[in-house]
Length: 395
Image (cartoon, rainbow, N blue to C red):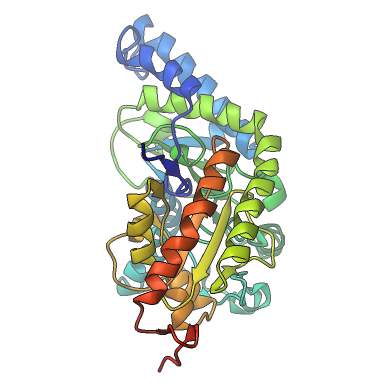
């Protein structure tokens, strides 16, 4: 019987059983509209308040009302960036990085078409944002800065506190895409000094289809959509009560399990060490700096990552070649390109991302099956010399 080992938890995690159990009544007995005035809906509103409080605790927010629920982190990112820009219309300069998630990168490219000037801050060989370059890029026309807390492909943690302190002094709005950080490492929006912080429930064992945006008290912005009064007018539309309740439970569990998340690094390192010992063409991307405890990005030189993914899929091992939001694209990872990796490593990169439900037995199964897959693919690779047992020079 084929095992099933899911190591793509940066894309989406299993919904925690406790979160799922909490959601079910809101599809059956407690389906009232939380925004209605009658008691059947008003009682449900209290559950939204409880979820909002739990998400605020996850992020270290001072006030519950600083949390706005959305449909996903992509919406949160768009709401943050466009919401700020629509308020500060006289400023046309945006600063972001070359390794952001497509939700920010693609948005910035669109904004360039709309007349905005975007500075893409480079990263070093480990994928860490060049803070000095960012500081030197700020000018009187800068409307906002948007930098991710942790990279979705490598897990590399960005120096957001240093950036936030600088931008606070300059009085420039700071948005942080915290999707890959929340629930994996401690987050404190006040220590970061950010004005906006985006998260998504399904990254920390909550349901898909619900996210949140932290908006610091006093932050000026306009809503992305126009409609009703829900979420204090920031995000009109009937609330996804079941999803929000599930997110609240997942946020509570994430806070309680943060210590376990940090111990997950030992299991990640065991997987990483085992791969490097067994596969001589393997190397870690971003491994010399702080990363989220669940993620490692490994290049298997001279073979295609898609081939590795398909071969592992046949063995019941599920991994990713990069961002799930980029799946289907033939373009190599923009993150690894920004890190200036050689072509032979970029195309053979695989992201392994664990969760608190990942077991030692699952890691051992991957270490058992992966080396054979790599050897098979090397033997048929046009970039590998089987006689010499080494890679060919790639033009």
